[in-house]
Image (cartoon, rainbow, N blue to C red):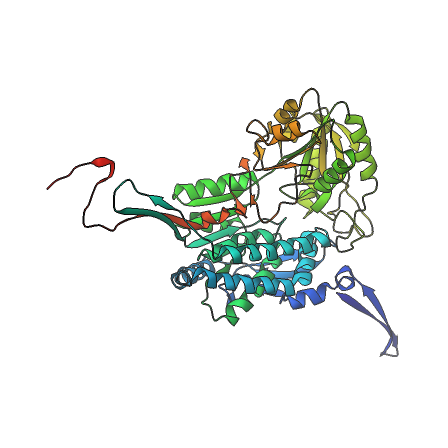
Length: 539
C-alpha cells in the first residue's frame, strides 16, 4: 500500500494543493498489492465456496499481518446455512467425480500444479506476509504444493491392490481401493497452504471431494488457493463441490468433525485440538488423520560433525520463528562436547537477523500474533522458575520495524528433560540444551521421554550409533533422521508421528490409502461352491 498524503494551504477560504508526500509501506515495497491482485484477493472476500461459486453470510473476519500489523483484507465467515449448502454440493459432486477414471483425475491435479507454478511468487509472498515466515520459506511451501501435485499425478495410475491365492480351488482373490467420499480438512496457520494440498491432491486422485476449513489466523491463504483451483474447475467444466471452502472459528470445525456425511477428517494443529477432534469423529465411528504437536530433539554424540550440527540445530530452532511442528525444541548433547557445541550455538545466534520476513536479508520473522508472544514469554519464565539457565536472552522487540508486537528474540536455555515446560511444546523459537553422559542409549531414552513423537535426529559419524538410533530400540518418532535436522520433510515419504502427535500419515509413500476404502474380492470361476476351511454343507 502506498499512502499519498496531501498538504493543503488555506488562504481566504481558497484551498491550494501545495505538494504530495509519498509514504512507502512494506506492502508496496515488496509487491504485496500486485500479489494480492494476481491471487484475486479483494478488500472483503466471500469465505465460503463450492468451487467457482463463492458466497457467505457470516460475520467479518479481519486478517492482520504479523509482519507490520496492518490489515491485509477481510473474509466473510461461513454460517450453518452456508455450510449446509457446501455439504449438499460436495455430496452431489462425489457421485460424478468418483466415476472419472483415476488418471483423468490425475490430469486435473497436474493442471492445478501448473497453476501453482504460475502463481508461486504471488502465493509465496502472501504466505510470508499473512503468516510471517521468511519469503524463501513461503516459496518453499508453495513448492511443496507443486511437488505433491507431481507425486499425485504419477500415483493416479498406481492405486493398486494385491492379487492373492485362494485356499479354495477355482477361486481367485484380490483387493481394490475405491473412493471414500467427502474429506474434511482442518489446517493450521503455520503451513497455511501446503497441508491443504497434501490432503487434497491425494484425495482428488483417489476420487474424493474436499471441504477445507483453513486457520482463522490465515484465511486469505485459503481464499487464494480456492481461487487458483477454481480456474482449473472452470476450464475443465467440472461440477461444483469437488473443492469446497468454509471459514470461521472452531465452531465450523465442530460441524466437520460431527458430520456423518464426512467419512474422513484430516486435522492439523495442537495435541489439545487433536484430542477433541479424535473423540468427536470416533463417536460416530468415522476416521481421523491427525497431525499434532511435536517436541523434536537432535542427539549430538561425540562423533558428530559440529559445524553440521550447528547449522541443522539453528535452522530447526529458529526457522519459521520456531512455529513448525517439526521445529527443533531440544538439543541432547554428550557431556564431552557439550561446552563446544554450546559456545558454537551462542555464537551463531549472535549472527541472526530478526525483521521483516519479506526482506531476504533477515533470518527470523515474527510470531503469528501477540498471543503467541505471550506464550513465548511464559515459557522463558517457567524454564527459569524450574531451575533452568538462560544462555541466549529472549525478549520482545519494539521500535521501528517491529510495530506489530510479534517479533521476539530466539532464546536458548539449559534445562532438564524432566522440566514441565520442556515436556510441553512451545510454539516459539526457544531451544533447550540437555546434557547426557555415557552411551547413546541414554540420549535415546531422554529423546523418547516426552509425550510427542513426530520428528527426531542424530548427529554422528558412528555407524553403530546411527543404526541403534534407527532400530526398534531407537527413536520412537514417525520421522528419524541421521546427520540432518528435524525439519524439512520430503514429499516422497509419509509424514506424521506417533504418540500424542496423533499417528496420522500424509504426503508420500502409501499415505494415499487412508483416503480410500479397501475392499477384498473373491471370485469363483467354477460350477462348484467349495466352502472355506474345508467345511461341508450338503443339501
